[in-house]
Image (cartoon, protein in one colour):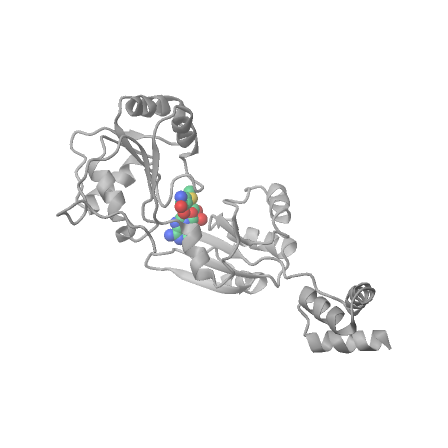
Length: 294
Ligand code: SAM
């Protein structure tokens, strides 16, 4: 059973002191109520707030009735790391609690935060994460594709040649592949996917998750591409693509496996071993083994 940490006594959303250190929080990817209670506590109680987009964070705080008051709200994104990072590290060295939110979803997942995490760890300062929404996991959950092993590969490169070799490198992955893509490029990327992964590979196109026009299209790469029609779709998109099918076995490859097994095993055991290895019905393999042994 999960070892849940209880709320502070007598409070609905624990207004407890926030531990000094950097706290990454996840924010909604659409529906504002997808913020967690813990993220709200952190936003309400931290000494310093930092965000990829300070306006988005202020808006989210307004929705949830959290005042900024006199606390600093620092912008930290890919283009101002040189100035913002030392400022945040200084605050942490002074023993302050700092909360960081990227524009939407989980920081570091195709979003800023990695440089900050690395600097905090290198300085031996405390680092925490309050988990929550991420479009990648939301899409995987809805895709109907195997979720036992998945490979999140972020945004494919925007230039065609780089994208094609990026996708070719993923095509044989033994995992469900998750990609983020801009609506303007999604048709091109689906076309490239049809080439590298094959048009018959199963996939899901997940659009506007948790928002009003949420949509999930499931089918083969070709079917999803056809269904898009001539106009670019609107909104935010995650592509989830099935792994390559297991190797298909030919009559020759099964015979060869049987021949090898029959060298050391009885017909019955050889058939059982080859059936297990290939996934073919045991009875069918047994008939082949009998014919081979005759
Ligand atoms: N950090 C975010 C996360 O945890 O999902 C991702 C940020 S990345 C800059 C933005 C991309 O995430 C979008 O271009 C889209 O591919 C995907 N995304 C974000 N929100 C989404 C949503 N509501 N529906 C579908 N895709 C979404």
